[in-house]
Image 1 (cartoon, rainbow, N blue to C red):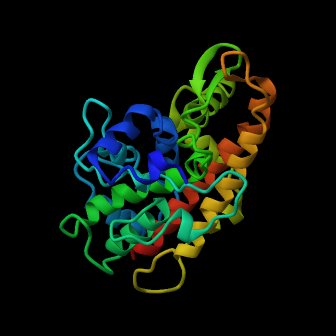
Image 2 (image 1 turned 90 degrees about the vertical axis):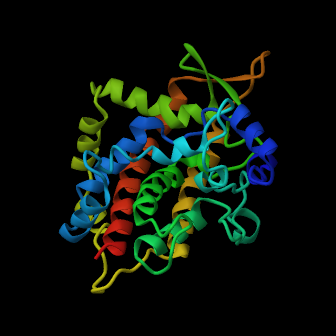
Length: 297
């Protein structure tokens, strides 16, 4: 369990420390979250789509609100307006260990990881219970859009006492200095888009959508209930476990450090993981649509 992340909400000092040393721990970056939201928007039922439109403000879309939750966390100069929210963006499953809900996402009144956050905000969206902030289904929707993306970013589902790879320095494709976390947030996706000749994330999302199989699309369909339902915690834990397996591989492929304690991630690393990034974005979009289709009847 990563102390810097797990106890970030105990005091304002530790929150500021977390935001100081982990400035790039925003999963997928803007492009990735937009891609997830765009794919999901194309898989909504008419009922869910109408409810989403009713909840969002004029000019907003799932894509435009997809990174809203990151803004609540703030940064070193501005710790953020919701200092209780940082833990909701990840789940610390130790490197090469199996998920343990007691150790990795213990039950607390405020929620201790992305899994518990998704469970709680689904209940709000489906009107099963009131929310943290004045029963705001609007905010619950925006949190869910973001956290489904987060839980599919593999380095948001692993802990090597390095804040999800933020303490590991790397050189990417022999060109630029990064943190390992940022490679999975942005660098691999950016390289995928560049090599596929895409500069627009929505067009790339639509290309990924076109690659979904009929079976994958069917996973977004809600069950037969006429009333709102939720995706169960065990299912969400399975999504995090899948991401953790990818994260383990991401770490095992790092190779040795150089004399400056940096890992060099070159073409073989990119080749090994480029499809995993696209696949995770696609499944995040499908699963976000599933949650919204179940919650919004």
